[in-house]
Amino acid sequence: MAAGEVIVIPCLSDNYTYLVRCHRSEMTAIIDPGEAAPVIAELEERDWSLDLVINTHHHHDHIGGNAELIKEYGAKLLGPGAETARIPDMDETCGEGDQVLIGELEGRVFDVPGHTSGHIAFYFPAITALFSGDSLFALGCGRLFEGTPEQMWHSLQKFRNLPPSTQVYCGHEYTQANAKFAKTIEPDNPILTARCQDIDGLRARNIPTIPSRIDVELATNPFMRADEPSVAAALGMSGKSPVEVFTEIRKRKDSF
Image 1 (cartoon, one colour):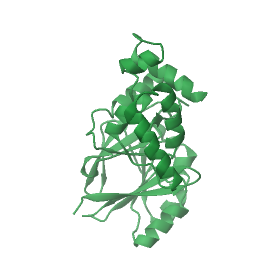
Image 2 (cartoon, rainbow, N blue to C red):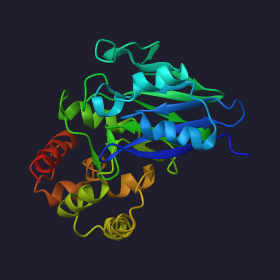
Image 3 (tube, rainbow, N blue to C red):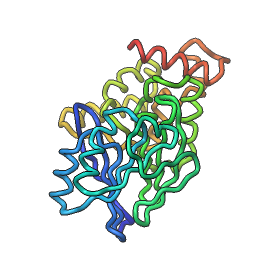
Image 4 (cartoon, rainbow, N blue to C red):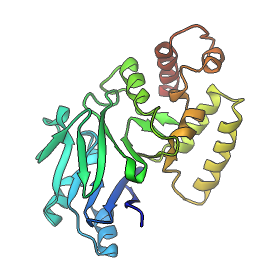
């Protein structure tokens, strides 16, 4: 039997929240519940309770369901220590290098500032899952509301050495729009071209494009490829540093 499972739950207009279940202990957590109702519906359908609420960052579309879920199930709240002042009533906080437990599922915490100053992400090896919030998206990365391009570039580097098959569970269904932008950066990338076709097919059937995979992101996501000479050349930036190339890509995406 698998160590655990991840249930993808759409919420709000384009957010995803994720139920994570440890099969051995039957402990269940929810990650970034933007709203409570779809989470409660999924738990009731499965006859599960909820033990833990986990937040990656303080934005309301990731914490909006916290209070109702905690009231309904008596769940504990875990989130980034650097955002204590902006996420109410956390029972426990964590940061870079810490370990979190969902039953017997052990998760490693990364500090990934950029989108917000205290953003964190979680990697659970037993289920080969990265919960990246709004740091790494499928074919994109989060807007830099509170951080710098250099911070975000270095944050994304922390994911590069995860196993290639790692499933990337991000905060939003932005993939189709991200794909259109990515094609403007690497129009001749055959892996990207094929991926865009797959994405269009999924969305035409209203199927989530999430999870993605780390190896796929490294091959197609322009924000993960700012150190590729071919990407720098395509932007007329040959010889520039990866941070400079990343900065230009982010600038173009912000006005795309």
